[in-house]
Image (cartoon, rainbow, N blue to C red; front, side, top):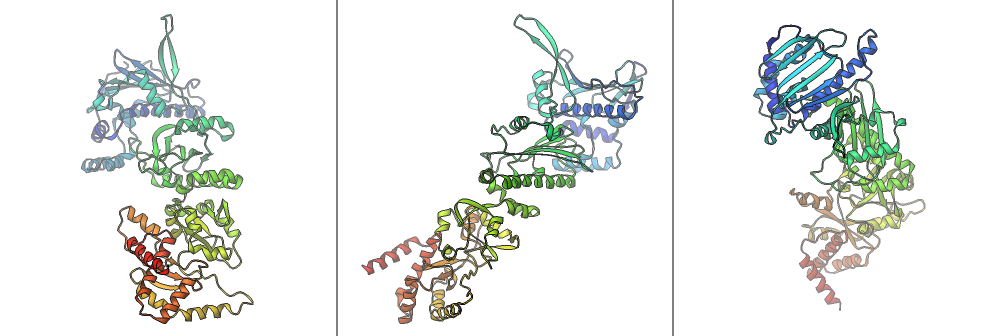
Length: 638
C-alpha cells in the first residue's frame, strides 16, 4: 500500500440510491455482469480515443480486452479491463457521491411514490450501473490506475454506508472490480455466478456484440485425463449492423436473422440503415417470408431488440415499432440513449419517437420496393402481412398515403389477380370520381350481392374487401389520389345519368318516381320497425330489392363485430331500395293500387325485405315467421 487507508461515508443520497438498487430496481440480478462489462467497454473506448488525441499518452492499446476471473475458493468474480482507468478523484466523484443538482429532492419523491414504474422513471438520470454489483456481492473491491499516471487507487465497500479508499503501487493501467459473492439462493434470484456455464450464458445474452473481446480461463480434460488451461473469448463481437452493407454477405444476414427470430426460412427483405447527426443509431431489420403463427395473438411478444453501444438492453422494445409492424424482427443499436437506472425503461421519448418514425418509413419503403420490382413476390408478402398492414390505416395517420400505395385487393376487373389502388385509378372510367368497393365475408358473397348488379352491367370496377379490418379502415381513409372511397352499399349511387343524345333518360326516371308515389310511403310505414326509408334503386338489374345504408351508417358486419366484442350497439335502421322494373315490384305496385287495404300486401312487403336481407348475408330478425309466410305464399300458387 502506498498510503493510509481512508474511511469515508457515502453521500446521504447515494446511500438511499444503493438501497433502491440492491432491493427494488433491477428485476433480474444477472444484469450486474452486463453493467460491469459495459463500464469496461466504455473504458476501453475512452482509452483508444484518448490515445488518438494524445500521441504522448503512455498506454498500450495493442490488445484491449475484458477479462473475467473466477476464484471458487475465495468466492470472488473479477471483471478486469486494460482501459483508461480512474484517478482517486474520479472514483470519489463517480462512485462515492452523486454530484447532480436536485438529487435529494428526487430521491425524496422516490421514497414517497408507491408506483415502482414511477420510481424507475425518477431515478433514470443516474448512470450508476456499478451499484448493481451489490445485489450479488457482500463486498466489492475496485482497483484502478488511470493511463498516463503512476499511482493506483483501491476502493472497497460493503455497500452499507461507508467505503475505504487508498493509494496502491504497481497496478497496471485499467480497472478491476472484484465481487465477493453472496451464497447462491434460488429463491432470491441469486444464481451460481462462479459457474462457467452461467457466466457464458449471461455474456452471450447481454454482451455478445461488445466490440472488445471478453475472455475467461477454462480448464479442459482430454481423453487421456490430462488437463489443459486455455483462455476463451466468450463473445462473438460480430455486430453485423455496425458493418457497411457492402461488407455483409446474404449468408451472414440469413444466419443472424435465424438467430434472433428462430425462423428457419430466409427473410423476405432486409433493411440495413445508419442514422447520423444529433442522435446516432444503427438498425438491422428483417421482414419475414411467412407470418408467425401468433401474429394475431393478444399475448404475442412484439418489437425489436434494443442495444446501446452494442450492449443488449431489451428483447421486445415495443416503443420502436408500431403494433401493425409487429412481425418485423431485428436490432436497433443507439450510440447515446438515456435509459433508466436498470436500462429497462426509455427516458428520451422525443428521440425514441424520431427513431420509430424513420424505422417505419424504411420498412414501408422496403415493401414498396418489392411491389415495384416483383409483383408475384409482393402478392405472396401481401397474403402474409396484408391484414396487419391495413391496421396501420387505422392507427398511423402519418403514413396513410404510403400504406394506401401498398394496399392490394381483389376486384371485379380480374378474378385471379388482385389490384393496387394506383392501378384501379388508372383504369377508372371517364367522369368516375370515386373508388368503388364492397365489403363482405367472402368473394362469392360480394360478387353475388344485389348491390353489384348495375356496376357489373355498366362495367364499373369494384374492389372486393373481405378482411374484417376492411370494415374499419375504409371509413377512416377519406380518399386516395384525390378520389374518395365509396361503398356501393351506402348512400345514393346513381349510374343512370343521361348521356349525350339520350334525352329520354331523365324523363323516364321522373315517370317511374311518379308511378311509385303511393307504394313507397306505404312500404315505409309498413316496414317502419325495420327500415327508415324506401326508395327506388339504380343499383339493381335482376334482383327485386336490396338494403343499403346512409353514407355514414355502420355496416351490419361492423355492427356484428362490435357486439361480438361485448359492446352494446343500438340497432341501425337502413334503407330498402326497390328495382322498379322487376316483375315482383311492379306486381306489388299494381296490387297496392287495386286494393291498398289487402292484409296480404303487408306479408309480401315482409318477404321482400327478408329476401333482400338474406341476399346480402344478413340475419333475419324472425326466421320462423319468414319461413311460415314464404311457405303459405308458395302453397297458394300451386
